[in-house]
Length: 294
Ligand SMILES: O=P(O)(O)O[C@H]1O[C@H](CO)[C@@H](O)[C@H]1O
Ligand SMILES: O=c1cc[nH]c(=O)[nH]1
Image (cartoon, rainbow, N blue to C red):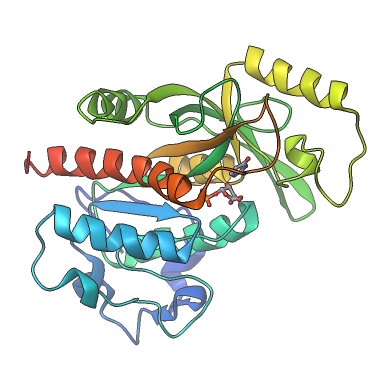
């Protein structure tokens, strides 16, 4: 049981009655691992979609924070499972179900490890609306496909609606940090979270398409008028779960294309790699500032 100044991150009365908690998708457990010793020092958690991207981020942040040991030797803490990877920063796969399973176990991990004052970042990619590709969007409100700042979860056959408000102070501070970085055009705006990359994001190039080019543009323009700057697939559940579990959180996604101009991501690979590093540099700068390493 966590007491004192530590925040109560979990919100589940059943957990206290369990003799053991197996974090199945992480291949970790409260009886098999000393979670406080392994993770009790965690103050910042960074999650992103792809395993390779997060491995390079873990190496990059290792160098930036001048941590002991060789950055190339960092080990995947979840190496017994191929679902997720973790280097005290890890990938979450694609879409709401994938990140939500990961967040349940991550938040329980922080609880079992007795962590306090943790900040969580989603560093990712997105499709921009009306922005030059390569722009970093810090999410003000995460909204659903109807432009509502909420996340709907079906629980026991009923719809539960949760707020997707993110930490405003973190967003402002991240924007401030971006002004210190070269080549990191950054804005704050709303982010739309969809359950599909193709039709769900108004793309004309999926295996199915049920609408015209005009209808697509009308929808994206309405989204733009509602303050939506980018589209991705995890922000609403990420914001909702972090908020309800008392975790300060931010979503920082680079735009890979301008969706008002097309659907296909045709930018050369090396340019995309450079774009994807922008949220990483920004969060690294923020963390270094908080650790007074700047
Ligand atoms: O930036 P990452 O985490 O890869 O996420 C974005 O990219 C994936 C789609 O290509 C979706 O998961 C979307 O949210
Ligand atoms: O258009 C895009 C690009 C990246 N990720 C998305 O979800 N959509």
